[in-house]
Length: 123
Image 1 (cartoon, one colour):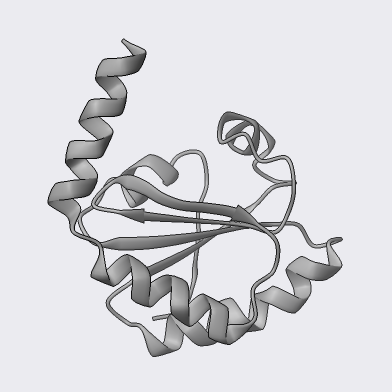
Image 2 (image 1 turned 90 degrees about the vertical axis):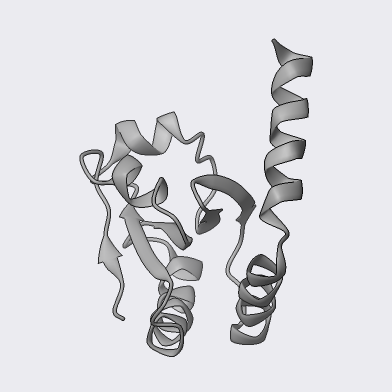
């Protein structure tokens, strides 16, 4: 699967779906973003069961602000609508593969339980 461009109109619907969604926050002027782009694209071709989305932070300034993006590239990973990974910095291919493998292995029942406990503490 190739990458898909995400916008303010498509972002929520995309990340809230069941399954794994990787989101690359980037800008055309960003050197590390340009170096990470082929790594991200290659991973999208290797993992056709995962959605690989890209958000152009220049075109989607409000969405980027809403997501608290302060450094690019930033990689966010959602599984079943829950944010499970959020890190700035370009990853080499092997590190991206490790992130994907770790997300695949997550026990989502435990993750949902942790999220519920955290929400109780902040309520």
